[in-house]
Length: 219
Image (cartoon, helix red, strand yellow):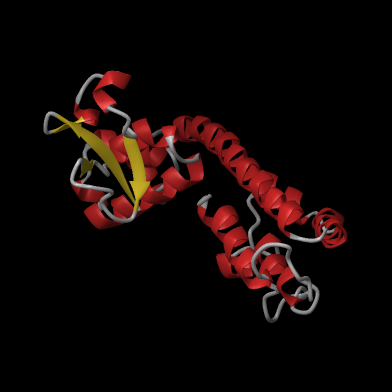
């Protein structure tokens, strides 16, 4: 994904100290999209811009992932000191790189912010996911799903500790249940293995949407 900024008089608004509504002329000042929205927008996907403007549009975990992508594309050694500090503060790089720009105590402090911001992101995603379930499944089926999440602590493990699933390198977790992943204890009991008939769309499309929300922060 890329961060696009509206151009005003040929210049991206992120190059200005700020902007006012009259300059926008009804357009969105910033857009996150895979392709250029129109010629009126400029790609401003830099680490500093994601850090500064990303929170206006996306959650912390989404922004962190985009910064991780940029670090790999650009290369650690080619980053500016400020870019390195941003990547380090968001734990977008390994400890060896973080040690180059931050002391242990600084990393501990960053870790507190990282944990709190990650929980906030996951909470927003989980709330949206639960709303999808409650509004797209029959009431009784939705309650079965909610009960399964709570009984096995899948929701709280995801929310507070970031436990996603086996394919993500974790013990069994929320994503294993949603996709009823083969080889896990949810292979026959997970959401995707049920015979639920949604009131809107298909169960398969609901699974895809839930994973986009919970894993990628796209909603």
